[in-house]
Length: 282
Image (tube, rainbow, N blue to C red):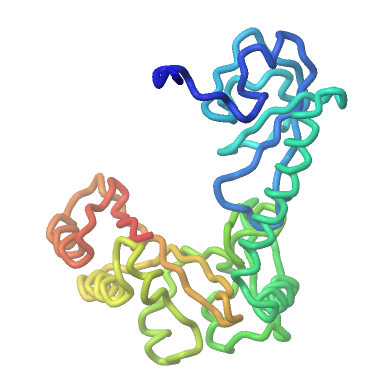
């Protein structure tokens, strides 16, 4: 008769307490929760096993990684550890399987965007003319960029985010937070730049009609509204505007006098503003 209270066997030998010894050479595979644009599917950090390595399932807390080199990636979410000794067959097999799994998972993620979307993203990124303004790279779509003229003119010098500094998990062309009248521009040029709809809109804190109304309310009060937005390529290759926040341009809340406006915008968005007069909508 089997004792029903006996612990079930651990299928992965790496989870046995006697599999690891202090000082064992090891490698950690580190990746993000969501793939990052332009980044490798994972990074490998070598080191030795520390005296205490708190494990949760088959991953270790990144804050306890031993031998972590300078300049290691930050913000990593998933970490797994393996012996580097090729004689440890369980680790050797698991390391190869995990490398393959993470690579294929990353490929599946980016395959959500069509080949046309990837081609257009690459083309448009190469048609942004970047210049430094007060030490911050600012961009303008060139005359050859495949974007509407009104979009090129509205965003001239207002695009933010070089490709080598992007940390996006989408086909992000650039950010913008200048006082660009997005609601009126999109209304005047329907279908040329999309906004989140359906499930994508449902995951956000405010809908586009609410954001547009909030912006118009700020303008009607004699203030200048601005939207913090991401300009992206959608999965089919179209232009997509992802609003992150609504704000009042040049507002110094320490001077007061905006309580009524703050209340009206908060009522429209069902979101409380922060001390800067910004409503996070993303």
